Image (cartoon, rainbow, N blue to C red; front, side, top):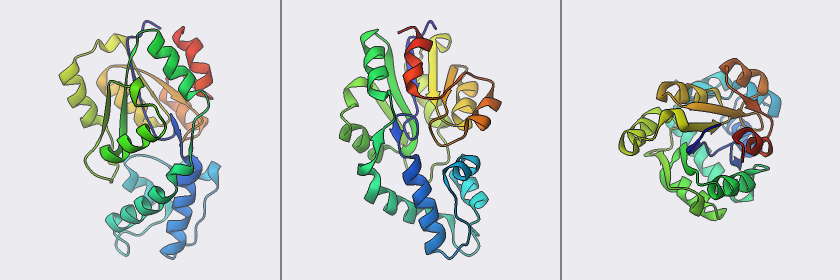
Length: 214
């Protein structure tokens, strides 16, 4: 691939927080009195963006429990436990190889930007990225508008730009931006779902350097 810029998703792509988010969902369901519980496979089949739609699919009734209340409680639980997470296999190696090859790299995340900065710093990855592009709130509506704003400022060559993520939303964002996309099936959605996007799908980031020719 003749790539100059890598746009990285964070959660589930570089940060392995799938088990934590699955646990947070099940704890929310328990705390708010809902019966369903989801194992990892079932979680990967219902997770989606915007997060409000995923919560509805999980079984929450927003007339009884407003989404804002659920999102606030999720963030509380998540923030308490995310430092126990690790990076996805192959993350540091591919970031280092891409940097060594002269590729520019940014993170584009649906996470709130201050939280994103804290996490990336905590894992010692900040120096790999030109910029961390996050959101202004915790509601995880999506990241297309933030991406458009960044691209309009920086104006990279779309034909040499690749978005790497773990969800169909990442593929949708890439399509809207006119950039390439690779999806990794080690994250928040199953390979079966990712393969419907019509873009290359890898099982782990350890496969990415060969795909990029690094």
